Image (tube, rainbow, N blue to C red; front, top):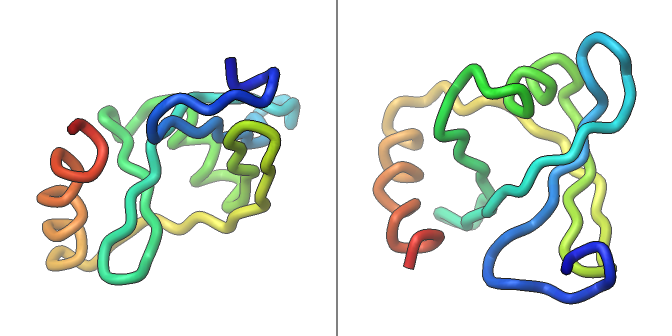
Length: 94
């Protein structure tokens, strides 16, 4: 439904260049906000979209007809990782 401009829940579409082909690849994601920062959580750290983001460093986040260029970096701070992971079920899954 997102492709026709309708939004459903917290789901956005992340479009990132493929790490080998450079062609746009899209995946559904659910961003969350923690301490003023926006984060994406990959259930599988080696998922294709996560690997593509690591290679490209940038992507486009879409919801309905709104598109936004984003720069993504992997969180390395263990305290921040813990805060994000604790917030994920409350913010996204409910």
